[in-house]
Image (tube, rainbow, N blue to C red; front, side, top):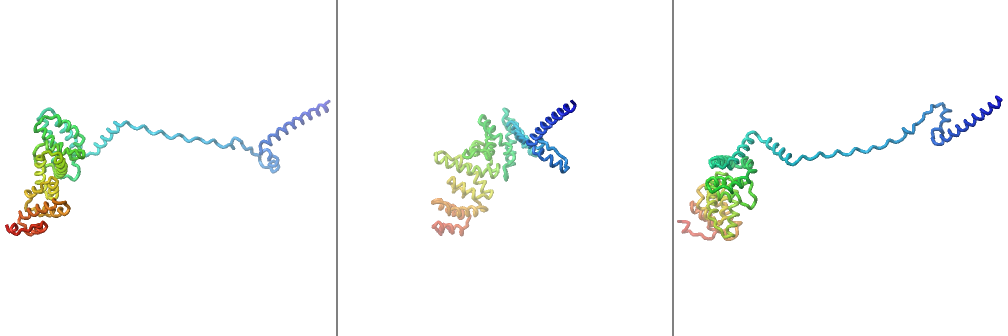
Length: 328
């Protein structure tokens, strides 16, 4: 009984071993490591189980999204910040001058005529002292530039008086850097302003005014308009140029307004040679009959100051030698 039972148990056990063996074989067929187990066991090497989880490749991570751009600040805040920074760049002296000129602008629009007059005279004095010798844009003109439109608008509302003429003088100088090309506002306000010394505003102002007079003269000639007011300014400008060694500029202006004879009245013994030299040099590039006119004015000036040798040389160019005139 026990032998039979034991055999039955053994057969049962053998059946289980066969099942386990077949299961192990199926596992070996799935994993190549199991096929190498007997050989590793025979060599006495330790068996290390490789984890399938560790052999897997790690998943690639997506790059983080780029950071969003910061929001732009509002435009008014940026402007105010820029203006504050610009004011910070000014020195204490320049900042004080800027604030003082802004105060003059406010006082010039005051309804009290006495306050207006004091503000305008102070403003005129500041501008005159800065424009007497200009190598760059003077600081008063730079600080008054933002108020040019305001002063122009107020000028239109002012009644006819001396104060309005003072305001026109200020606007004429401010137009030196603010006027639009072709508008000739510097000349416009000069004609409406006071009849003071034109040279007190500086050489650059006079030069700019001469250029605008040349343009306005041509326009009035085409439109058949009077030029008397322009010629009065020309007289002042020629006198200023001849006193400040600017003979070429004086001659150029007189050629533009077609009144070269006026030069004879303004030359003196210290500048007549430079004026005549420019006349004779420029005559080579002038069309007829302007070339002969320039030589004739030079001849007249040489004769006025008794420079007979130079007058003879010009007379030969004009082909009108008259020994009787030379002797007289």
